Image (cartoon, rainbow, N blue to C red; front, side):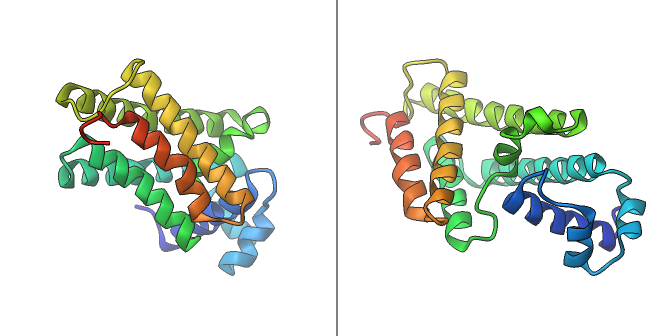
Length: 195
């Protein structure tokens, strides 16, 4: 069972990682944000790599839970992809989590510890697998189309959405910038009668 202190540490670390990346925060930053001593943080997470890997593992678990909820609530593949893009539009507009932590850390892979790299790669595999399955389902139902395999289309959509996050960040967390890039990528996947 995860303690309240552990959760507060993970929450603060996730916010710091999204705003600064892996290499630009320290246990001192977390100590200040949570209001606890560095020794307490080390007690729960002995190394920075342990802490970052735990943040990503929790992020992946939460994403899986969100995907399961979306699959249960939304049957139409096009609507599922719309919900995926809409989720990030809302996050960027609210500025509460305006960037995918997995995408952010992917740019730091050369300097990340192996345990963190494994979680980043796992995140991308999870997301690619889910998007690929949704696109494959949409193609089978005739609501989506792709000139490539569903896996290739999923990778392209994922790259476009992450690139749109980056463009939105450059534009000052501008949701309209994100939408202007991500929405046409969705439109390209829609079959002509749904476009």
